[in-house]
Amino acid sequence: MISKTTLAYKMPLLALAFLGASCLPLFFPSVQASSGVFYAMAGGNILLALSLGAIFLRNRALLRQGFAGLGFKMVHLVQVIVHLSIYAYWGYYYAGVIDQAPLIVCQILFGYLIHMAVSLARSGRFTLDLSVLPIVFSINFFVWFKNDFFWAQLLMVAGAVLGKAFITRVMGGRKAHIFNPSALAMAVVIWGAIAFEYLYALHTITIVASFEIIPHFFTYIFIVGAVSLFAARVALVAFGAFATLIATNALSLVLTDVPLMPSLVHPNIFLALTLLITDPATAPKTKIGQLLFGISYGLSVIFAYALLSWMGKPTLFDKIIFVPVLNYLAPCFDRIRLPIRARVDGASPAMAALFLAFYTAFFFSQNDTLERQLYHGPHLLRELGGRQVLPEDYEELGMKIFDQKLLIQLQEKHLRLCREGIKSPACF
Image (cartoon, rainbow, N blue to C red):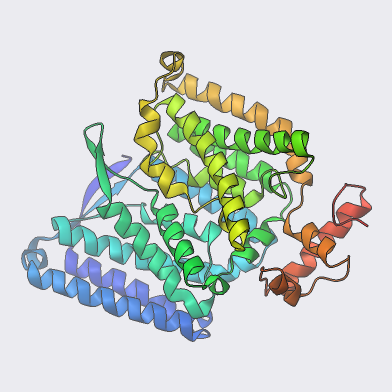
């Protein structure tokens, strides 16, 4: 804990301040331009205002004595800094991130209101911390709902905050949440969208495609992610997942001359294995457990890709849908006994640095291949016979991008790579 103090403001005043701040985005031009976003935010704020009012009426002592605590955890601070740096780099090359920023602010304020309501209802005390920020940032790395379905985006944030608060277990004598909050919310919503045929409400293909226009994105994610991996001592999780994906694809090429997936590791998957599955609260604690956890995640991505392909659904969610299952099994990985366990379970900074150095060496041995790989763009160009990419082409192939500028950027990148002589399915 970096700091823990008491704020001299009674809870009703702080609750009103948060409600007021949450209403401010309703005056943003981008929010007012979309009725779906406006009514989702207005409805959410009204519901939470009524909930907070009911909490204060039920426990009137909060009106006189309720104070807020202030506490920051180092792990949350590191996550927030890493996430913001990735958003800044992503937004520098793709303007859609800037357009999404007001909606991310809406989700953050909404998440804090839920966090406050839950804390007051359970303990009569609210601690203002950074815990909501990594949840919202993680969700928006992978899932954007279209404006008409912004209520579902808020539902994911609510599910993540509530899941963290109520779905817990005791580990090592301490109560901890079972699931990565962001992964749980995204997985539930994605499975729901698949079951009820609502995948058209998502902008996920736009996110995935935008990662392809960013130069050296793998390297950037790795460098800033290494800070988080070292701070949380979870480098072996990322290494196990990354090595598994590389090795299984290489084995498939040797045995069948066909890769298991169109790309070795897409930037979207690399982002997930660097930041999503490495939540120290929901990952195994032993080093062998972390390595096996990472290996299992890599295999789960491959299985999810095959399953979604067999179902005829977009494979863009392969890195998310089975993360909660692995979170639930985390204690099982810690219980696995191997002869070398005692030698590698050290949690010292020196040991963590050694594991991170090993992962770094392996990553950069594969980096050139990763930077040259292409994913949806070349596949699409090949299917279309090399002609110009149009928005309806993505719709025909089960993918939807409505950002014409992004389409142009993708095609320009693929054609440039062809001129540079880089082997690609997009080259004819």
